[in-house]
Length: 218
Ligand SMILES: CC(C)(COP(=O)(O)OP(=O)(O)OC[C@H]1O[C@@H](n2cnc3c(N)ncnc32)[C@H](O)[C@@H]1OP(=O)(O)O)[C@@H](O)C(=O)NCCC(=O)NCCS
Image (tube, rainbow, N blue to C red; front, side, top):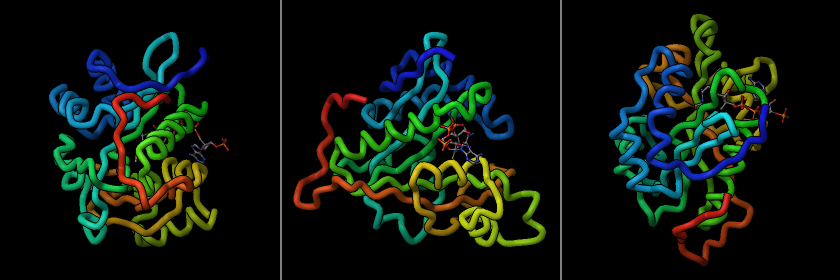
């Protein structure tokens, strides 16, 4: 594969991202052009893609939230404003990962890692305290008759099971914090559940505010 680079998302990327998302999640409706455009209008600094000379190969979408507003309970729909990011709060201290996906043809070649590196760069550049996300648990469904989603996720953390998403996120240095039930009901493979994960920014300065530069080098 050609060299992979990560850059900010541009409006002209939207049709290719929608097509890729439809391939990644055949059973979940992809985002509309309008939603992706809104995400870019609300928080362009938080939207990134990975590309090779042949085109786009993945993306990661994020917003900033005041975590205390959501910590006790939230669904994907609530915390992302149903994908519009109208819940974005530029004074918050937490970068919230709303979506990440890689072209299924090139999974397992380090693209997800580069997108997560990009997110960590955004987190540091904006002096945010952490990245929080709720990851799908796509390996859970075959085990759902035998165990709770919590126990399944614990077994992934303990290394008894591999999960296509949580195992990747643990490899990326995220800590598992528990399961959010009914996070994304349309996600059949995960039975709608997700694992709450966090990465703490070691460079965070609580004495300084969140700053959102116009340009962030990735
Ligand atoms: C999850 C996803 C983004 C990972 O991207 P990727 O490009 O395949 O991952 P990478 O190749 O960058 O892997 C990074 C590290 O995670 C590990 N990893 C990746 N997938 C893994 C898996 N299924 N099990 C165990 N480890 C895994 C890799 O081995 C690598 O570690 P290493 O550097 O020590 O070898 C990608 O598989 C994807 O798009 N999945 C479908 C969409 C999705 O469900 N997204 C999550 C939304 S919450």
